[in-house]
Amino acid sequence: MRVMICSVVFALSIYAQAPVRPAPMTMTTTDGGANLPAQKVGPNDMIAISVYDSPEFTRTVRVGADGDIRLPMLKQHIQAEGLMPSDLEDKIAAALMDEGILVDPFVNVTIAEYHHQPISVMGAVKLPVTFESDSPITLLDALAKAGGLSPEAGPVILVSRVQTSPDTAPTTLVQRILVKALIDAADPEVNVKLAGGEEIRVPEAGKIYIVGNVKKPGAFTLENGSETTILKAVALAEGLLPFAGKQAFIYRREGGADSKNEIPIELGKIMDRKSADAPLMANDILYIPDNKRQRLTIGALEKILLIGGGVAGALVYTLR
Image (cartoon, rainbow, N blue to C red; front, side):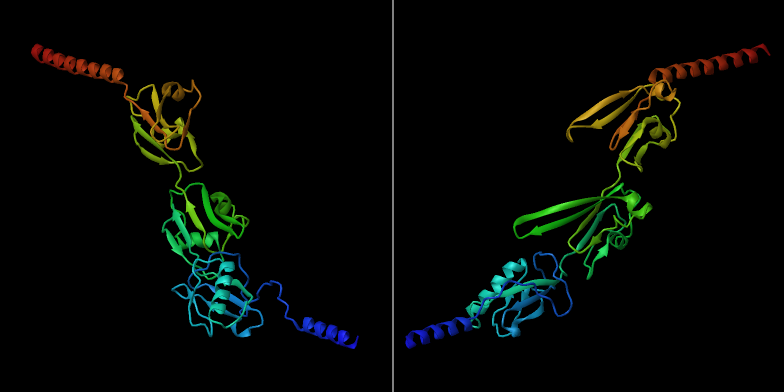
């Protein structure tokens, strides 16, 4: 009986001294950096590494320009660029075991700083630019780095972000922000924070094209949205020429880039306020043709008057 009791006590003492594998925990970096949302590691990022029960490996490390990290006592460099933090944990643990430094290490990796995620501003801005920011900035700050919006800027700004998750494939989220709300109304809710990796696109405003018998043909920007009207278009072109036709045509692309519809418009009735004004959409071409019959009639009358005037002058001279 005494031998059995001693065996039980010995077994319990061994069980009590057996190491217990710790539960996963979030690393708090020594430099106060936050555990940022998981993204792929890139050059110059700051990562925080925690190895349980091995303080010599618990530290913050800057990823080199070549994408590698270096840890004490490890002969090999570890390629970190392009890896998610969870994948980097496995790679560090494998390196420690391969070189016989630790047996079955528990490694935790968090991101303290992202430095490889550029912010791009493109489209209808004065100076398209791609830059990196050491700290979060606002959308207005990013637009200021691009010199502000150009006169051709449309009414909407598109902010694209790539959202990553360990369980799902990366997805791109696009946020539409109205220029009026951001700049004219100064709404702080739409002046979003940018942490890096965003793409800011400012599409150009839609244009209409006016050709034919107007005083100032050309392309005109739609400032207040994506539509205007025939009367506004004529006003932009500074009015009609004397021999403008009573019927105009709108050429509009619909259903694909290769298809074009010709829409007849009773311009004369619209100008005389006998018909409702017609809408024009972005990229419409308004063609106002020449009234050839009226031009020929007027030309013939001018010739008759010119000839008649010459004959009358000759008769007067003869009579004298």
